Amino acid sequence: MRVRNRAIVAAGVVVAVVALVGVYAIQQLGERLRLPLLTRTCTVQADGRVQLDAEQMANAATIAAIGMQREMPERAVVVALATAYQESGLRNLAHGDRDSLGLFQQRPSQGWGTPEQIQDQRYAANRFYAALKKVRGWEKMRVTDAAQAVQRSAFPTAYQKWADESEVLTRALLGEATGAVACTVSSRPVMRGEAAAAALTRGLTLDWGLAGMAPAAELTGLTVPVTDPRAGWRYAHWLVSHAPDHGVKRVRFGELEWTAEDGTWDKVADGRPTDGQVLAEVFAER
Image (tube, rainbow, N blue to C red; front, side, top):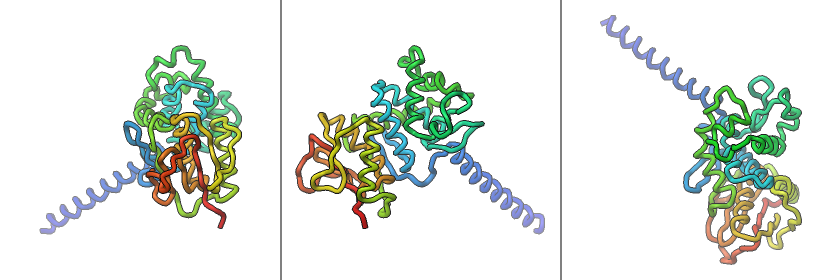
């Protein structure tokens, strides 16, 4: 009986150790990839579904916008997003292999810029697109081959596993889908009132090169004039992507509006479409 009891105890110890090792391995994998295991606040649906947290979503939106501002093909945005997915998990990291930094893990010692420049998401995205554009024939390459031609990684095929997610994000962020980006926002936003509206205006100007935006007539926020639905959804999705860190309470375009309270796109309550402009409302000052 003692031998049997000892065997049972030993088996229990082995099971416990295996379980702990498994939990540790999952934690280490999540840390290595720097992708959230549980906290996901944004859902993107555009012929596919992707979930990101607020930081990842904002960075993805900025990468896509910089690509459009540079008049790069849609394929370039897919490559850029897949690269940032693999290199940093779409996070603006302050560390990495050797002196690698930022979204694309660019290295100051390799001429990508100063540490401060590389950790500016817009600078980093611009440098990536500039390097990609110099790669002869990149448009016809697989996503991973185009990315590798820029990054020169020790894992040249690793970028391909993010191609599908990057294509979904690209379709949504470039306005090819309607109401495709939906984020949940805390009731305690980082920014409010005039500061939030000013930050949004600055962000749209830097990411998209927009100018001449005016305060909305009925909302505490801003108005973005648009010439076609695709442009409207580009800006609407950008605004929702940056909602968690810029205090956006409501975004309205066409017959739909997104609200921080629900975190979803629904028909506008008053039935008045806004086809020629995107309206953004921010949380009011307390």
